[in-house]
Amino acid sequence: ASTNYDVSRSLTGLSLAMQFPDVNEMPPGNSNRLRNIRSLLGAFLRGDRIVTLRSDDPSPLQALNLMNNPFVMSRTNPVNSSTLEASVEMSDSELVTNLYLTVLSRYPTEAETTLAVGHLTSGDERTALARDLLWALFNKTEFYYNY
Image 1 (cartoon, rainbow, N blue to C red):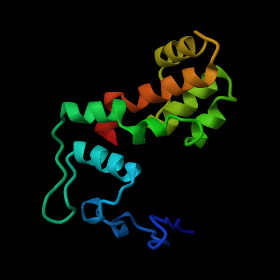
Image 2: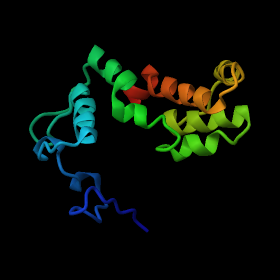
Image 3: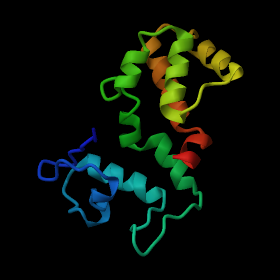
Image 4: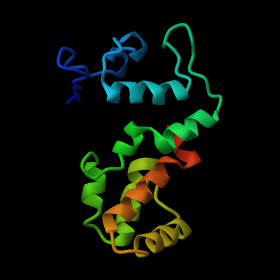
């Protein structure tokens, strides 16, 4: 069974990433979300899939976008992240493991688990602390060099 994606109201049922439109060719519109996505993709020096290859050159703009781009920040909000919403109900070590597997596709080391659990137990607002952890994982060099 294949998975189909709906990109917009008029572009539905796509099963391959290569069927997605190039965001450079999409009309600018007035959507803040679209502008934020373009800014994020632009920071990572995307190519055009045919003539210009994607650049692997790092830049400070990449790190700044991962730290501050509203699209990325929205992904650390439990309302927009079913993973975070479900993780908050788990035990501390399960929460840490779940977020590491989701974001970095690996288990945390013992030292990472200890540090993260220490952070989760450092205050009263568990959701906010888990959100901070998710944000930190998105901003690990390992995340943006691998993904």
